Length: 225
Length: 201
Image 1 (cartoon, chains in turn orange, green):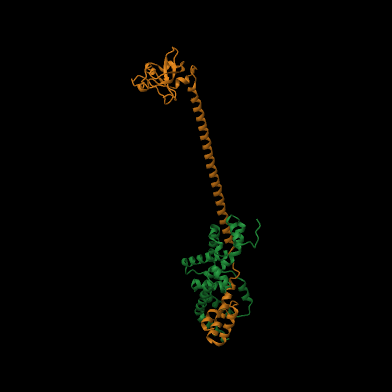
Image 2: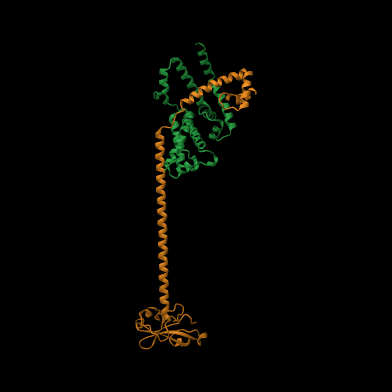
């Protein structure tokens, strides 16, 4: 062992930290080198002082107030976290309930709407000669008035009745629906415009016949072109 | 909830993170003294040491996920946090001195001195030497100081010190070597004075 190696490892002599062979080599070097012997002696004295300094505070502990403060902080933090979790849970619960309620309302509305459509859709399916003395029939008449002199067309788009020229809406209260087959050209005699190319086609027509036996309005069922 | 005193640190930390205050208390009591002593010896100031311990454990309370068990022991992690706090303390108050020692209570050592047969001159010399050693340690650059504090004052093994400082053993050895050399150089004059004083008796 030389002086440099001794300086690195030999100062641990007596400290119980050096390896066996190193310790042995350091001891041998100490006997041969007075400079290192002096260094070692100084270091041992200093180590004694350091140990005394260490012993001074070896039993030192953090004052208990620190533990109290930390525990307080711990409680505050976890209490806040718990409140936050509860609030988040309640928030999500409310949101889920609102979504469920919305869905339920929408489904109900949809079902109700379908039911109404189905009910109203069954009305025009009345057979020939069956009367429908209801105000509903009259209400379903499209009030396309001839006052402005426009061309009247028998509508088959919406399934509604088209008033014939000269008919007053108030006279339809007791009207009845009669389904008849006729050539399309006959609609011309009732005052409606007819496509001349298809004038000879046979079509089914619903007539709204008033008390006096005169047709008041006309409707082409959906299947008729 | 019962806590086994031998319960592992990471288990305690996990329980503490879930809000188990007892687990946190066990963890704190297990590590506070070593961290406090380290901080005290690094700063030389009990108030600063107290603040550092509080900061270190506040980190455990507020952000327990900062500790990764794969990277080392909790003790080493706490030492690491304490080192950072010591550095910050140094930046903040580089010349802060403690009044604690001057205003301290009458301790066992004082009582022992009263009954001791040695002369007041001896105790004065002893105190002076110790103050010089304390000052010399506090004046060391921080990386050498922490090696000296852990290996000489705390009397940790090189392996333990390396774990605490999260560095190789070779680094500890070299820091210790340089730290000792610096200490000896600083105290060279001091060594001569007591020797001469002792030779006169």
